[in-house]
Length: 119
Image (cartoon, rainbow, N blue to C red):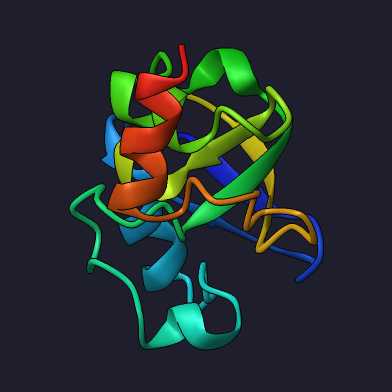
């Protein structure tokens, strides 16, 4: 059973292998959203880019980066993931709501389209 450790919160939770990271975070009582994104999010369907987590350890135990993540996270560090688009296959340590998780404009459908067109 994989364990998700929350660096800032000082807690951990077990989940089934293949669990969706966003759902596991929420079920642990940890909020993946920051500020207005608590109200302005897509509910986990991968269209808003607001459920960003920083992976501190165990990145190899997560699903590969999806095409959607590549677009939404193009202006963020390589160890950032969208929790709604990530599955957990082993132990991982994360930091929900990293300081620079919002990025510079790719947190919306319009920003994602701009990112794709500028490639």
